[in-house]
Amino acid sequence: MRTPLKSAAALGALAVLAAAHPASAATNTYVLDTGRLPSAQGWGYVGVVPETRVYSVVGGELRQDSIGIGTTGFNASYYTLPVTIGPTDTFAIKVVASLTGREAGSVPDYPFGVSFGISTPTFYRYVGLAGPRFGATIGGVSVYEYPPGFDPAAYNTYELYGSGARTSLDVNGVTVLSGATFDIVGPESFLLLGDGTNLANASANIRAFSFSSFAVPEPATWALMLTGFGLAGAAVRRRRAGAGWAAR
Image (cartoon, rainbow, N blue to C red):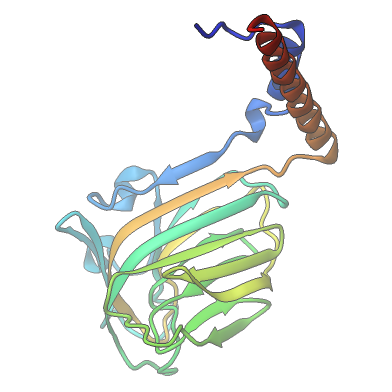
């Protein structure tokens, strides 16, 4: 019969591990219910046209259709949601979406008709999906190639992740942008989702949106964690040695 591990070393190890994981460093997660409009879930809507002109819910998915709302002035129509993230925190945003249409604006290849990311009031770190190539705000706007055989009309999985100013983007598990230096986000960060341009509007079905972040442990915290693991390992080895001797 197995007996609980109750040695002083084991209890000490557990205490050290607990100290190494304060509540403030816990993972911050959020999952959008695409079966309801984001405005009904605490998101703010930004746009000069009514929300329901651009967004609706169809079959449990969030549908965006900003085609025809105009390409002059600031006709972007998007959602924002405040989040807490430190300048060195690790974060990840995952979106599953199908691009269903786009219009030829003043810049036909401009991809920000469907966008998502994380930003502050002054710095933007987001990607645009609605184009023959995708775009990213990296000290300005740059465009990049999708993986070979990419079909924008299919339901594709986009994952934007990084830490500090370094950010990467995967599309269907393939890294298409690696370690790009974006503007650093901070305590006034917010998530962004929707039509982020007035140049070439687009339509899409958004099946999933999720966000997660966690604080990267400081060196002192790593030392506590390693000490805890060492104490736990030593306790297990002593328990196994004692059990082996008693069996003789």
